[in-house]
Length: 339
Image (cartoon, rainbow, N blue to C red; front, side, top):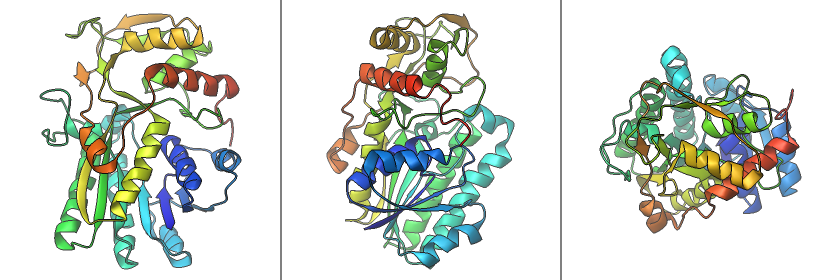
């Protein structure tokens, strides 16, 4: 079974590639290295002992991507390529719409041209915007509040229209909550490009490693037990397993279905700091600063649909997430380095 995975050298993509290869799938990995490194490919081979085909291509350049379809048969696509920082999307919305929407349109057009109609799509919990209630189910109102979330929601709606026009399509829309952690080998993990990471866990690990003086906690006046925001943190290996389960689903059915991938539990920022300190023995100095515009108080998933229909649920807890990400940081103090 031949699977094309876009963005396969990224944080979630690399872990998904490991799970897919270990399940015996044949992989064609596509990436343009805009937010990843070539070294990841070597690490995937090292973990799995398996080979795969790699193409360096940009989805906004359909001619580059078509070479993959022309040279290899494809049974299904897992689409993870895209840009993903909320703050950056507000500053540069055109880049986000070009990459996440136009790139997806190019991919879908090629899939249609070559008769490939099985797709697992990397969406996001940001499509829900400010939740009306928690836990958030797939039936919750969709109201993305920033260009990143809107680009994911636009892509979802395009795929729903595609299925409405052609009932042979089979598409799983995976709405991620907050991926953290790293592969237990310590060979692959999250490697932000530079500066202060936009995501909480790599921010914490950089403080723990002494690369940053202190963690900035954005607000302690939310209506939560300790005043800090609550999120649903999911181990990236569990998330990668979810892609395998979603792939099995789209290969055996038709239709478009959305699935929340989260633990169904929320942890506050201060709880995450405490869990990290307990799991690693490292102290995390922090200071409270003003809230970030648009941040919500509480956001966590109802993942029961994925359990019911995909046979998937998160297996790893917050301590394991912290332990694995610190192992990655210790073994890779400079991330993947220059390449």
